[in-house]
Amino acid sequence: MLGLMQDQPLLISSLIEFAARHHANAEIVSRRVEGDLHRTTYREAAARARQVANALDRLDVPFGDRVATLAWNGYRHFELYFGVSGSGRVLHTLNPRLAPDQVVWIANHAEDRVLCFDMTFLPLIKAVWKNCTTVRHWVALCDAGALPADTGIEGLVSYEEWIAPQSTTYDWPQFDEKSAASLCYTSGTTGNPKGALYSHRSTVLHAYGAALPDSMGLSARDSILPVVPMFHVNAWGLPYVAAMTGAKLVFPGAALDGKSVYELIEGEGVTMAAGVPTVWLGLLNHMAPAGLRFSKLNRTVIGGSACPPAMISAFKDQYGVTVLHAWGMTEMSPLGTVCTLKLPQQALPPQQQMAVLVKQGRAVYGVEMKIVDPDGGELPWDGQSSGDLYVKGPWIICGYFKGEGGDPLVGGWFPTGDVATIDPDGFMQITDRSKDVIKSGGEWISSIDIENIAMAHPAVAMAACIGVRHPKWDERPLLVVVLKPGAQVTREALLAFYDGKVAKWQVPDDVAFVDAIPLGATGKMQKMKLREQFKDHRLPTA
Ligand code: AMP
Image (tube, rainbow, N blue to C red):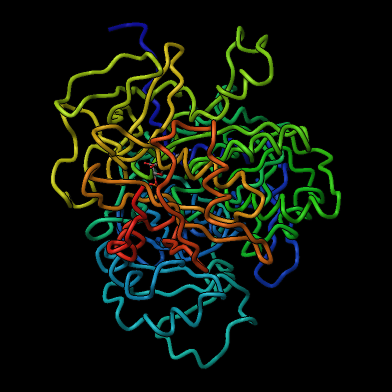
């Protein structure tokens, strides 16, 4: 047929080449594990990504084989993103927060061929390298001089030594855009971790979606700080979006404390930063006592777990920063929804706007959503009916790597395990998780709501709400709380804090004060462990 469009595959190599050509001098700034700030540009990063591709060709790593990273957010990791995937290998980002045995299990399951790691993780690599049975080449992300001579690790080279002899020119191969590009294992709350395998097509389409004004709204006028790790769903796709838009990139390395993040935001004129709520809590706690302000930051993308409304207000009212509350999953590349107001909502009074902004938001084009009842029947978008949230779209998995866990789809839809409402304007709000819900007398109680209220109490540092068996109601909510250092509050005072905020029957039956709440490798509260810990907890009788 005459007159059709060119058949140009959507490949990750095209992103870095676009950045090198159109935004050659845009900066990539990294706080290195050594502590200093490193500065480079897209021109230089593209040249070094081509060196990585040449180096992998030299090692004879076959097309589609996995090249793993165990690294913080930084320029070398960024170069690997493009050099590995662009040349047709699969970038496998390992999560260094996992226990050594889990890292070994995942590396073996993925059949990683090469493993590139930050020097921070040298002790971990020394402990596990012999058990990683498929890895042939170990690359330390450092200069030759920084590598100790006696690591004992066979086949270990420094990154700089590895790429230095390679040419900075490379003909990126053209191949099917549906080829695998990168691999990320989910935190796996049940069973073994499972891999989400992203394609070139899904990655590029996701980057388009994430860059849209009502998503993260990124442009060549932005300076982006991805605090979200590059080992967690590709830092929410930000490295690809940055290359697509030519935004300045600022990488925090290993320093994720409030002071370091604040200094980087101010020092590098960061306009947009992205991360999970815990990080922003650290930042706000650092800023408030010292009366610090932001000079350029105008928005933060907060997701990964529910952003407490108190945090959204603190950013807006005290710092003039818009929180973009976002929701997604590893299985969704990860972006599903982002919360931004529509035109008519801009005229609403602040309180009504806030009622919208605390929701997880509207679907990005490319993501279809529906909520269903236990029989799979579709529920109305009335903002009241809550049901299991199902999604589908071109950047959502259709199955896990190697077919683990069988076919996860239900009639072509991916069940997220989240429970949500969707209002008539399409704003989705997570009310709970099907794997983590409290059902009392046949009625749902949102553990997230209960936690958010507790988090707004000045004495509370962290709160988790779990269901505890109850003879009459089946389950009743127990609030597990970690207090801020030096803070005090009684059980009665904390429960009284719920007066008027939720229905009486939704108020937790009891409070357990603990020193720490168990967190998973990605910083999420491990409710299963908590439920186990409190399975014999005796609730006071009313
Ligand atoms: P992960 O695959 O580790 O990113 O976890 C995805 C899950 O985290 C989702 O299915 C949700 O349960 C939860 N999650 C992510 N973002 C949010 C959010 N903004 N609010 C509430 N839960 C979230």
